[in-house]
Image (cartoon, rainbow, N blue to C red):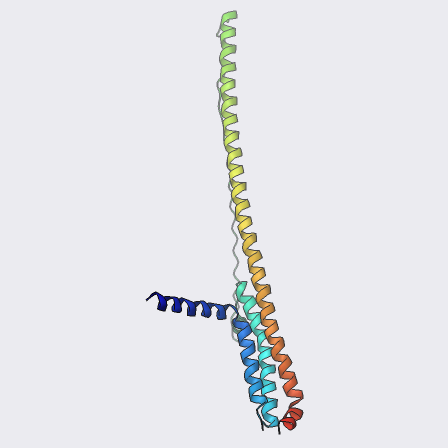
Length: 217
């Protein structure tokens, strides 16, 4: 049972290996098929020329493939959808034009007010009552200072937390953008190389079809 399981896992690994290099195997397979058809003994010149034209068309299709893949990765609609949307926006003769406008305004204001108490020395203040009032006012002032300091510390902590969270979000977004650009660049190069190889063989088969046919006779 373990032997068959290892074989199954091996085939799965081979499948993933082929899937990771699908562009290479697709390029080699198409080229091998075209060369096999073109270089068989007795192959006619039109057959070779048609194979070359087929390879040229595949090379040109890779350009459209690369454009569509890039637009898809960045969330843009396909060229077909863009064309259909453009046709739907074409103005007809009997279409009524409706102009709509809207305006909105919103005001948001916030304010805070604080009250505090001042202790007096009484109607007939004495030295002792004045000193007592001063002590009470100083104590109340210290309390207000402590309260303000606590509020400022809490506000600073909130700002620091917000900045830290924003920094983390921006870092993750930068990493995602960098990964997306890297994927787009590497994928575009892979598709471009595929198209370049197909165009090369297509040009050779198309332009040298007569010579190849004469050589194969």
